[in-house]
View 1 (cartoon, helix red, strand yellow):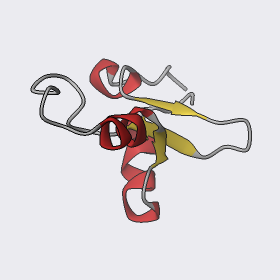
View 2: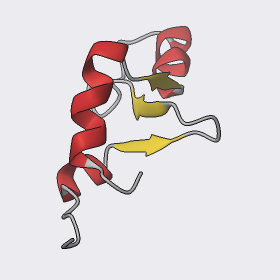
View 3: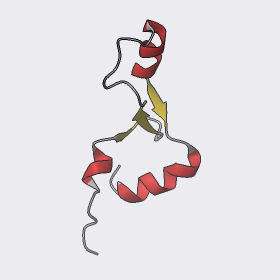
View 4: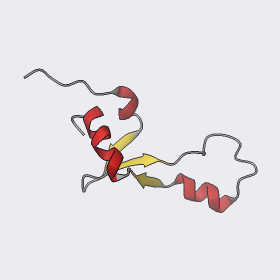
Length: 65
């Protein structure tokens, strides 16, 4: 069996937790932060779990995750 290639774009965006869930960063935290409240920015800093419907696609892109 040949080795499977990892989608590098996906590898930079997702990682697995210890229990096997896939986590991602939340959007809207890159620029234009001046008018956003501290609580909103703090909440966007936390990691989010990938939705169960998208999880299969992510796992196909990351075969060794």
